[in-house]
Length: 116
View 1 (cartoon, helix red, strand yellow):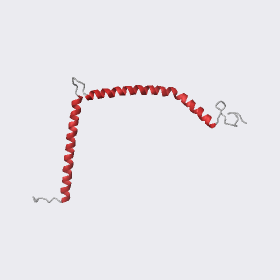
View 2 (cartoon, one colour; view 1 turned 135 degrees about the horizontal axis):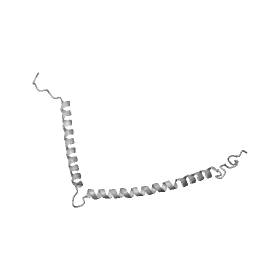
View 3 (spheres, rainbow, N blue to C red; view 1 turned 180 degrees about the vertical axis):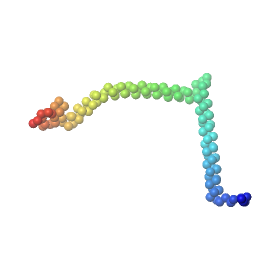
View 4 (cartoon, rainbow, N blue to C red; view 1 turned 45 degrees about the vertical axis):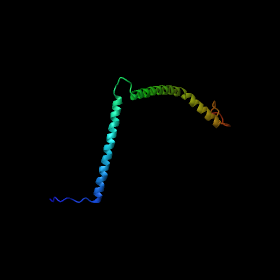
């Protein structure tokens, strides 16, 4: 085996520079993310005074409870009005088509079930 140094071509040198630059950016990003995570962990620790994170989480939990209660009331209301809405739509459709709701026949037709 030869111990002579291998010449680096410009394309290989450029690729190495790009990889080195990308690695620096990755390390910088990881350092920033590490600092952010450390701050989140610091804020999440129980303390004598209420932390901003704890207050925000309590506020969000309260809002979610309120929204859940409202959605449950809406669900109950929707379930109770469904038959009325269906009947109203059928009446409106019958009126638009000119069908007599009591007989089921259209204008100039004999009542349903009768032959003319």
